[in-house]
Image (cartoon, rainbow, N blue to C red):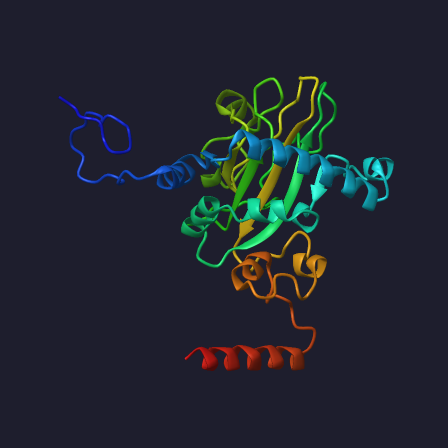
Length: 287
């Protein structure tokens, strides 16, 4: 008789199997799903009171960005009214969200030890079926048609609100991170699925997985916070060190590395020499 495994699953019957991916915890299961299907849904472990506070902070940052961006009318004219850029620059709670230890562990196991937060954007899918600028199929590394042996970037979309069929849960093309070309319309319509997820969960994607926001037919806006973690060679969407200032979290090297400090492009050969001298001196001091 089969017994339940430590992961809570009953082992499946099989034959002719000589190798198997070992069972693990939630992080390992998310990684296996990402490698196979290009997406995973992950419980961030927030309490109801945590979620209430995050929703309030989301709405407060939304108003700050509207004011600092020249008003909602201006942002509507440039189609930015539904995207809240660099939320962590306005509220440190969103820096902590970007530093969720399990998400960083997943990204580092898939992408590499040295990862950079390429972008953090609040995403608002407006209610009542209104037009939505993320409602087209895309990769989060757009215009690229190749496959790689390991991901160059991971997307972690945090569900501030529940993602449902009714409110436009993200559409995903499973395993499309393994395809160079965009699937045919017929194939996509037959195989695409909606990533339905409770509030407080991350929808994690290989950044080469094709996906799209769906139409929100509910009467309320659906809120989320998107993060993209990349190899350091990929340019940030917005220069976060420039936004945050040279002295931001000066005593926290891990935060600064994640935010892209130290990746500034030298503007001359002499600046390059100086940066090399600083690295050499730092490595000698560490010995």
